[in-house]
Length: 285
Image: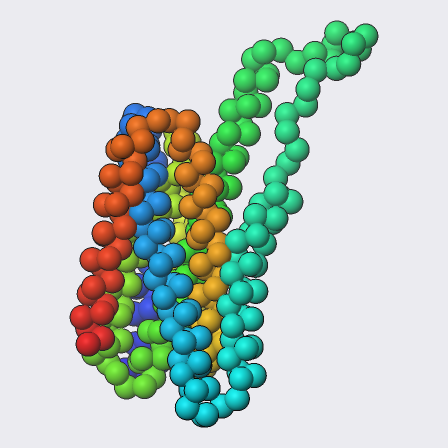
């Protein structure tokens, strides 16, 4: 498979994330449907979390096996293990710190006793500001999810590029088809937790580029560069970021109730991830 074909198909695999994003424009969803959609996205993200850690641990495990057979010393294994831990820390705690830094301070409170009555804000203004803050937080959460998914998709793109360069055309083709199906579900993962916030088309275009674009970039890099540390870094970053995002969505959805429905859709989303991954595994076999 040529470089141009790899780039084109990698871009196609990443573009499919846009298939699920328009659902975020629907404004007629009930609280029950919002919980269902959000927890379905948590199920998908949970599978991605398991998937990226499986790949990351496989890299470290292979290094341990090679150390045991004396193909290399312990330094490489220690380095990869440290890279996994640091990457996971940066993806989880680092993403949380970044989100806190870019978050504005809370709404201004009333003036202290004796302050001017002109400083008091009307109830209408406070309501509008609260609504604006709710919208901002929801869109920020969706952007955070897109970043986490983008890190994961970059690692997937690396696998496409490496397979295509090695001449494993059948495997590369199945990887592209499998990742395309998988990326189509990731669009739900971004817009599901938005609740009753209706994003603009421009915002959907941006998060689609952030979440799906790295598949294309990864395919380009993977075709030209083979680096286990680079691959491990992005798997670790993605794993930590996705874990942070799952916690944020879970906390945000608790106020809506519908616990049993949410857990059922979580399991459904997880199985959708499993089934799409089976396509990749079958082709790889």
